[in-house]
Length: 244
Image 1 (tube, rainbow, N blue to C red):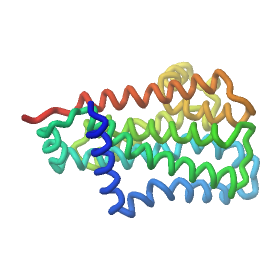
Image 2 (cartoon, rainbow, N blue to C red; image 1 turned 90 degrees about the vertical axis):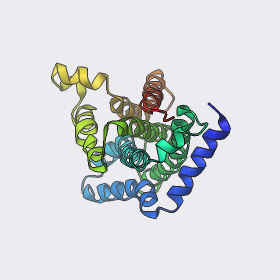
Image 3 (cartoon, one colour; image 1 turned 30 degrees about the horizontal axis):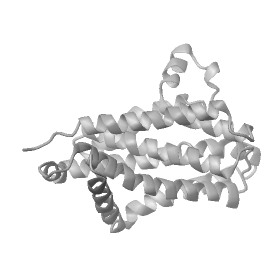
Image 4 (spheres, rainbow, N blue to C red; image 1 turned 180 degrees about the vertical axis):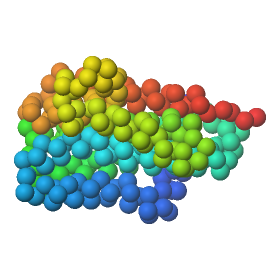
């Protein structure tokens, strides 16, 4: 793995995205718009919005980055760009981590913007600091990016890539504890939630809402989310086949 080639890959991806304003708008502004819509949907029940909004910050960035990254990576595969790159002196990890670096930069901007809007403009208050909120949201977005890179290998069209949303993300969304406490669910659903990464992203946000300081459980949740992201990136590199 070469840092120079990794940075070159990241630069190429960012250049492509710079000429795709619709994708940039989807990444940067759609989470903000959805959170604002949610605010006014609960305008007569602000306490419910204040309770849900921080947890949504652990979900929306993940979902948006998952969709964008899986489709963008699939285009590289189906258009033959990946095959051409693999004939050059560039390693699989250079490609994967170059993509990861580019989308991670966007994830930082996206999560920071969404956190600022929620905590500032929409007036949501949490016990923890804004830095903790941003860090948790950024890791959620990076996890979505990593999962998108990995799962794109199992799709042959953009339609199939989108189908991973209901197949992979929605079950996690229903069991992560956002709607119903996990301890009230059927035991098999609790077991499923315990091994899914979205659960820990939502749990991290819950810790921020209720604890003013950095807790050991918050650290555990962040490490689990980061671990899933790293594992997904490594598995994503395995799915790339080098062409001679």
